[in-house]
Length: 199
Image (cartoon, rainbow, N blue to C red):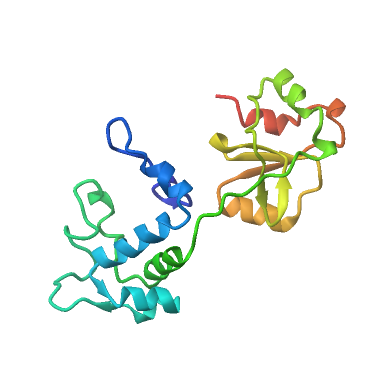
């Protein structure tokens, strides 16, 4: 996501009717993502998976003997659902292998979001008066700059402090649009921010 030629995010969803609780287990179990990544490497016809994960180095992975698979096959990565992307799929990609090794070594840590700063007070009624939906209950950060207000469904965030260049750069790379709010809500919601929520 957000588009086939501009992929910067991954959307995970459960395809099982009624849901099997897989997504919640991936969040609640700190090591679940790691287990999934380890299994993916095995499915992709690699040996020395445990050694590569322990070393944190995808170069330790070796192709499994007797597996006739070059970039991908219907036993590992290819399916009828991803046919439009078959030319892009490459199980031997150094970046893809290292990403899976890194995921296998990592763990999920639920972040705690600090309370909104005093300078953020009063903005929620101003957003409502401007016809903007209520922001999410938790903030988001870019380059360690906390954005007091976030609308994750719209990839929009705002804060009453000056935006750093680093925050803007990282947010832009992730597909987010950031806004710097005026010093007080009496100055009104910036028109550019309001326009982000118009159809």
